[in-house]
Length: 453
Image (tube, rainbow, N blue to C red; front, side, top):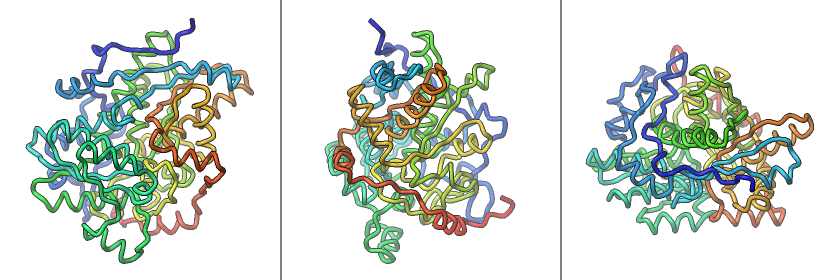
């Protein structure tokens, strides 16, 4: 029989996270304050615990994973890697296709990997309450569960369009003790300001971040937790790629190309960065492809500039590919990818041509997700469908050229709570959104003016 599942024992859960910043030729650009001057770690202490800040600014290549975190990881890690034999056959491609399935976590996605780490570090710092944002609900679900494990209360500001589209994600958060608020809300000054201007505002990740940050900064017992974008989040997710490297070694293979969805960057960084470590050490170069929606194309159509991480300008300024902090993305069903900017690390690597990016339309991603489900059995999350689409497109290109590449994508979560989206696709009710260049240009005109940047 052909091997389909590539499994690792619990003893192979990584003992260290990989920090890609240590292997970049140019150090990451510092975050800036409102005055345009670089911030040190203490400036973030109003919203982050000190041990989280240490990881955020670290240039150390390997950072130990605390044993209490590894012990909880054992509940679902290492995640399985699969050879997609049936998909390969259906495509008629000479390529070998592998995927790593992060949907087996209790929360159903890769997000729990960082949620556990962040809850642990906040518990160690004596924090009893966390605020956060969530788009599609995977991060909010993950942090609600992690908070329950460490005895920390969690309030989640959920983007309103996803709050309405994905009621069972909301139920998951509440089952695990999370309090879920539709964003924008009347609970914060940021939310009230946005609703006053537009009572029907459907929300965005940037708005939800503004609300969560504002609340955390105003309460001594509360810190903020972020599900993507920041360096420490991408650091935690590198267990994905580190495990995958061991799994490829078990079958004597290695990828030529890696695909992962990219909104803020945690999914992509987690899968791709450990393979860049091999290249940085003189090993094989792998094409690392970040896949984003055409409706929210921060890498492929954004501007490389300093911008806020949230809509209201409450966060530090970060050098990133951005569509503008007040960008309002359409209400696509891949809620986790509806973000105006990309991680500073992902953005720097894209700017320096160390990674690639491609944007794909919504309907085509669901077409790919359905094809994958009908061959491999797993119904993917809409975010994961973006990586599947790009991988299938490459496999079909190789069918035309005869190239026999090894392709790998991160299946970052299941779509069991996204069936309304699939219903709309199956009934031809989904639309493609190509964001107008004029609106992107207008948003970029409103970027903060930073001296010397």
